[in-house]
Image 1 (tube, rainbow, N blue to C red):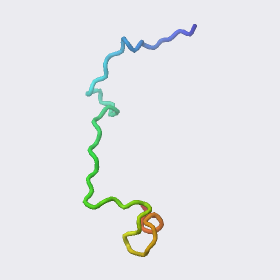
Image 2 (spheres, rainbow, N blue to C red):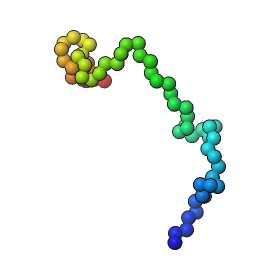
Image 3 (cartoon, one colour):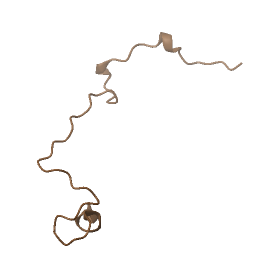
Image 4 (cartoon, helix red, strand yellow):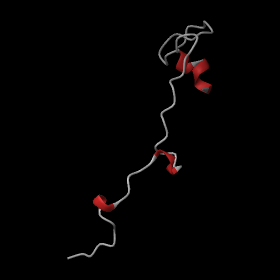
Length: 60
């Protein structure tokens, strides 16, 4: 039998919001865009006829 030096879950204190670890922080609000997002397979906005991912999206 293996001895354990860990505290059982039933004896551990409840996590609190003020623990400061950052992992339990409230989720960020979604980004609001003025224009719809350009998809990778959409035509490029510069008008050359290529897909966005092969033209202006290549540097992104």
